[in-house]
Length: 286
Image 1 (cartoon, rainbow, N blue to C red):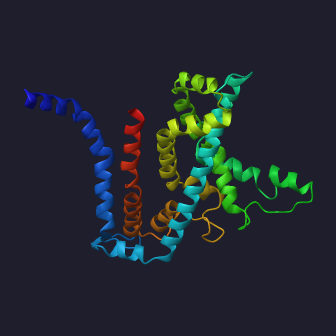
Image 2: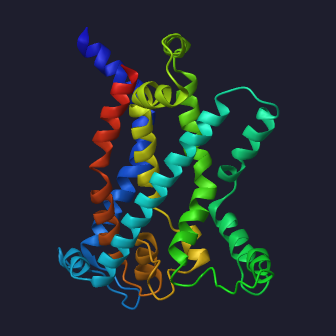
Image 3: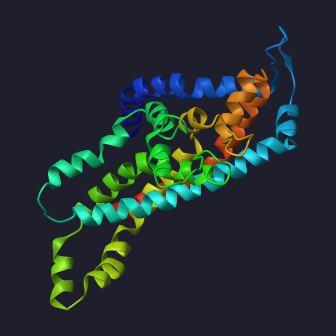
């Protein structure tokens, strides 16, 4: 009986398993095969390379610089966006005039393609025709938004403008599932709003916030289009993420083997986060 149940479960799951194989397993196999090969755009013949590509990647200073920038950028935007998303969720967790309209407006940024947002930002911040530099010039402030001293925080701010709505929406959804009896009991006991947030809201939402933070952290590691359109990884390589470095290695340098090796190393770097997310999800469900 148990054998028949397993066979039926496998049969029902077979379309999904087939789709998963086509979408994930096969590209992963091709990526691993390319990473173990000497595959150069300038050469017609593809030859085995063993682990040479991985060795050369690990010995490459540009790889570690791009990884360092990516980690700092990902941590910065994740912390900022989770804090802003939590604050917005608290604001919208009450009734006030125009709430529905403002709620809809807050979600607009995540409905726009990141590449389109990057083009808009680049025009708005352009030193010659941009609205922001023009506004600052009226007050005698002559600065370039893309100056090396400001570019990092410019990119962090622009990322927060787009993806804070993502963290806000998820935290707000988790906030709506909190039992009202807890707040009523705290109010009866004379707890202040600050105490309610610090001792009730945050502890209850901690698993959900942890999941949201990890999802945003993993997603920010893959940041490519916004920064590439805004700066191209410059000035120099100061804003070059690991995604931009992989792209340049593959399509500018023409070394697909090293680019595939970098991609696999990046996946290996992000994989340890998944058990944490699953563990937090189980805690949240319980």
